[in-house]
Every structure is written in structure tokens, then in C-alpha cells.
Length: 112
Image (cartoon, rainbow, N blue to C red; front, side, top):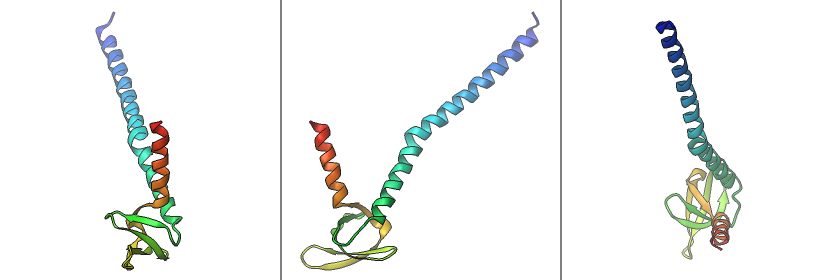
């Protein structure tokens, strides 16, 4: 048997396994990191586009209140009983009361 031919066959097999490893790593990253992040972004955008007057919201800074006015890219809401009105961009809204209630009920169901 020719030692050069066996070395070339081994090198070709090693290259193929390396490609398969890279493909497997990309698939793992896609399903564990990229895909869930895209789903989360899509869900957040849907929530922000479905805002309506009277909804209770929480901003990314932790300020809570009820929506009193909505424009294309801003939301005005009142905080508490002193009726202070704040205007923020839609991207600054992290959750609504509806979403928080749904998550709490799901957590209670899973707990049982």
C-alpha cells in the first residue's frame, strides 16, 4: 500500500468532519440563541403596535402608568393619582398589564 494515498484519504476525511462540526455548531447557535431572540423581538413589536388607550404599561426604566394618548412613535401616559403625564417613545415600553397577567397565569398553571 502506498503511504501517500492513505495520508491523502485521511486528510480528506478530516476536512469533511471539520465541515460537519462547523455546520453542527451553527445549527446549535441558531436554535439556542438566534431563533429565540428573533421570536422575542417579534412578540415585543406586536405588543407595542397593539397598544390602546387605557392600557397599563411599564417602561424599560420601571415607570408604570395608564396610556392617555398614542401617536405613531410616541405614547403619553399618566403615572398614579397625581396625574403626571409622561411622553415616551414606543420602543421604551417593556410590558403591558395584559402581558404580565398572562405570564402570571401561565406560571401558576406550570406550578400546579
